[in-house]
Image 1: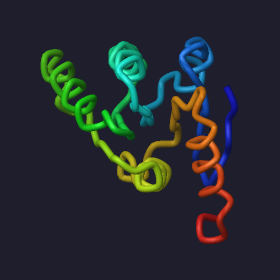
Image 2: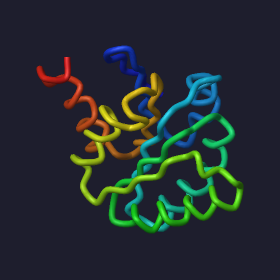
Image 3: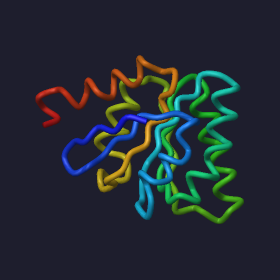
Length: 138
């Protein structure tokens, strides 16, 4: 897991193998998570992690990719079944829109911890870090 500090926030770039590190990173804090979903297997992983993220304090799921809307709908059902209507879900088809929203607007820009599940997604990881390196974001 890699961590990037920006403003008063911390962004974790991680994957499913980082469960313990993610739990320590978000411990006791509200956070948002970015879930890329372009395949059935990625969707399955996102939904499996959904419950765990809620247990850890996740307050917003941001899905991106060709299966983002479907994943968002299933997360909504899971959250409604658990009575967790306080948790926001969003979905984006395009990585650029998702990355900008996730970094600068998720949670009304109040979360100090962001978790991006970008294992195997060097393109999305690079897009996130590039956005943090632009002059207007500093």
